[in-house]
Length: 387
Image 1: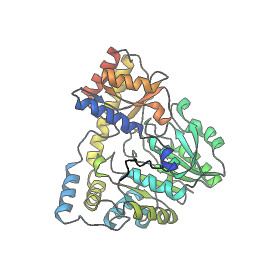
Image 2 (image 1 turned 180 degrees about the vertical axis):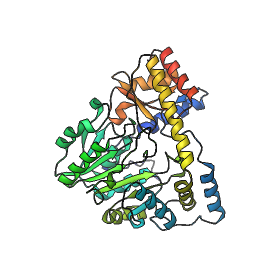
Image 3 (image 1 turned 90 degrees about the horizontal axis):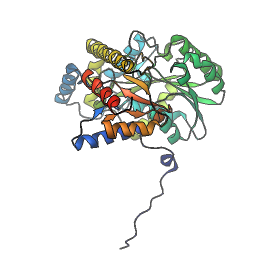
Image 4 (image 1 turned 120 degrees about the vertical axis):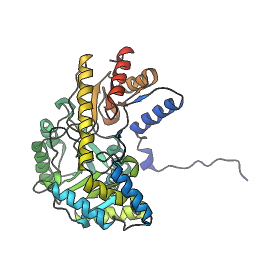
């Protein structure tokens, strides 16, 4: 028997991407916690509330009722109808047959990119952009063009001219994420109308990631597919992780024109088969009977946002006020990677480098944490000279 070790040749599509920066920070924070360090973890995009009890009970009831088998690949009819009803409330002319229920919103995005992007296809991202968009495009072999909203306080409307210069008839896809991860920016109706005009002019498919759509403060987010001319060129991505505090349940969906659903459905059926049966039943309960809980969590996030912005202002740090999600961008040293690493290792405060989102000079803070922990984090960063 040979003593030689296997030296596999890894696929180019895997070599093109790096591990998720957000998960890497979370893993290091967990390691420090395991060593007994008191880490204030402001890196994770996860609500700190328990899943609403009625949703948990619905999941238990579904287990007791034996809903542990495979489901139709695109999802159980009751959930697809509940999602379609929710989308119709948002102004989207949705039919259950235009939906695929997935194990998390990330899977819905992955299937969409795989179905639509070939080697060399151009995909336009709005920076700062969530870390996995780039990775998914590169895995598919696509090329990236990026439009920076940072000079415009992270808003899209003032950047529409730059976006118009970036897109062309060669653009295959534009990804829009509002409310935004990592900035918390909510794009105006005028900005969305501008996206519509460009998409129609250049025949571009737009992926609208609306996972934070119900987490907004004093404003409402319009769904892109509800705009005239967009229903047949928009893929709407959403899920249950953020608004319903169901991150570990892994439940999401995509809504798209029939042709996209047919092609993405091939990838879905040959990879994950279907989302977990009993989790889908819990999703029906979440959509139909948790409005009060969603509002309570949203109000709490808004209160924490205001507290954190005030605390930072008190120590002389001004930040852009986010109108949605539960993140803000903290201006730090130009070497944001080094700043975040030092803040974690010396102050035991975990944040995510802005460079991970193509926003150098910033750190993303999640304020999905208690007021006490937010104050503790800022106190440590000030005491140790990071702020």
